Image (tube, rainbow, N blue to C red; front, side, top):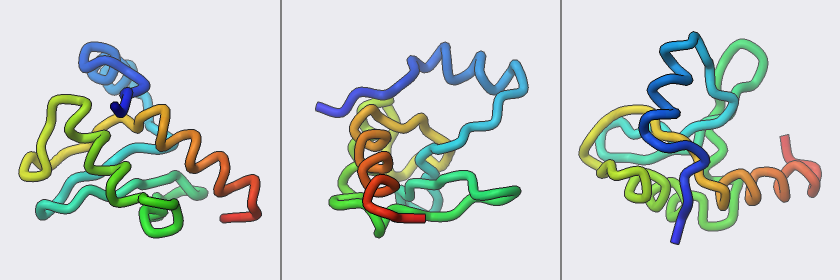
Length: 92
């Protein structure tokens, strides 16, 4: 099962403290996408990760959300591992 990197309380406190996530799952228009900070903007890396769409949807569900509830969700440990592997393989 997917494991979010933060609890709901930690995620809220992170934003209240002015935090800006380097990586998160964005749900919009019933689509979950893995977003990564690249310079001053975010880029969608969902399709660059093996099973990226599944990982994104699992992250939303693991956090207690749903694909029909728009918002930013924390990544899971599985997403971070997949993204690190992607970078190690030369991805950008």
